[in-house]
View 1: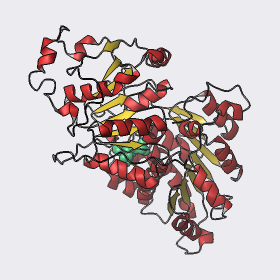
View 2 (view 1 turned 45 degrees about the vertical axis):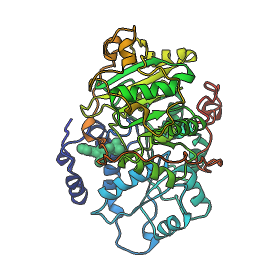
View 3 (view 1 turned 120 degrees about the vertical axis):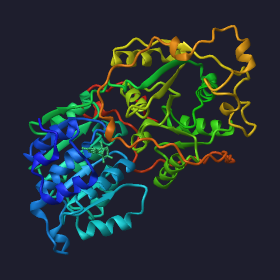
View 4 (view 1 turned 60 degrees about the vertical axis):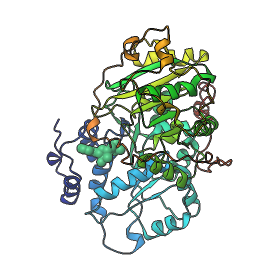
Amino acid sequence: MTSSFSNLSLAEPLARAVAEMGYESMTPIQAQAIPVVLTGQDVMGAAQTGTGKTAAFSLPLLQRLLKHESSSTSPARHPVRALVLLPTRELADQVAQQIALYAKYTKLRSTVVFGGMDMKPQTLELKKGVEVLVATPGRLLDHIEAKNAVLNQVEYVVLDEADRMLDIGFLPDLQRILSYLPKQRTTLLFSATFSPEIKRLAGSYLQNPVTIEVARPNETASTVEQHFYSAGDDDKRRAIHQVLKSRGLKQAFIFVNSKLGCARLARSLEREGLKTTALHGDKSQDERLKALEAFKSGDVDLLVCTDVAARGLDIKDVPAVFNFDVPFNAEDYVHRIGRTGRAGASGLAVTLVSGSDARLVAEIEKLLKTKIEIEALEYDDERPQGRFNDGRRAWQEGEGRGSGPRSPRAERSERPERPERARSSFRPAVVARDPFFDKPYEAPQSEAAPGWEAAARPVRSSTSPNIKPRRKVAALFKAPAPEAAQAQDA
Ligand code: AMP
């Protein structure tokens, strides 16, 4: 199979846009999916964000839509022909931006609608007419109900990050949206995993799909050093301080399993002197963007987030990822630690395991097909947690590992002074990822001393109308419910 875009016979405006993006060759999902989508067949693709899947579906879609190009200003000449559905606002925004770049030399129009923003500017765009509409399900339904979006001429629909959409509870919304579309259409479904629910969804809405699989869910980057430390719930924050300090880390993501836990942890870490922000499903779009910018610019050191909120983050290659909670779904472990150690950079993934987590760790072992050793973390500082509130970053008080002598207390410790790596028997699964095209983490330029925020931002009590609590997906398919709604609060 060819991997050069030039062999695809893309129309000149699309080929020019691709050349301008600087892409030299196709990624594996592109090499496999583009020729299939160009023939108009349905596709079921297993690929995660970061594999180049946006171009994999949007370039052939745009190519097939070129026959509808019109320079007319009449909205009637620009009906929605392709609909791309995504679970989160950030993902919708990112995908829409990419599509706009690929379509920039065509007369095809595209726009994006998602919740948390005023509907009026979105309505104006929709009323002008667009061929490609990128949307989150909840907001799209709002526009359908307001008669701003008419979908009876849709020829292509893309269900992107379909597993996440089901996790969030978007199945009923998806079913409603799909009921507005013509039966005669091409449907493309992309999902990180092919769970039974995803297969049912595909069975209901795809016709003889071509299955394309490029990134297996049990792949974890070989460059990620993974540790599982035993830590009781009361010790977990202290463990974070210890690892940040001993490794001399400046920034990290911290994953938690619930929105409430996310807000609470961020507040506690902030009180303990770490510049922290929380990112979860109840944050407004504006708050999310601000949190992201603050992390990118180095104004915050720690981003505490839930899986759903993190899914839309366009930040990869962060120096370290902490799993404050062991994830409920083993696949989420792979997604989480995929944030670090990309493109040859070494990354650190630390999972804090409490007594009740044995079953979840066993699930991860099963997925990674690797025996996980739970290690004991050595603490330099014997002070109890909660005493890091003196305005200093506790983990920057002393010398980092390898950068000087350890604290006297550590030197007096009876425990052997061995590097953490040597104590671990856990070796990550081997991987062939496509790291070269991920947006790399860029360490903030600013070396300025951290300023302490008075308190963590208050958490909005209301739930976003478009991020619905997880439902029992299997029940909606009239099948036995999966495990209790453990991720309800994600
Ligand atoms: P995606 O998985 O679609 O979110 O894409 C991840 C990133 O890869 C985006 O920043 C794209 O611009 C970039 N990208 C997509 N295709 C290629 C390619 N063939 N070569 C290099 N970068 C690419």
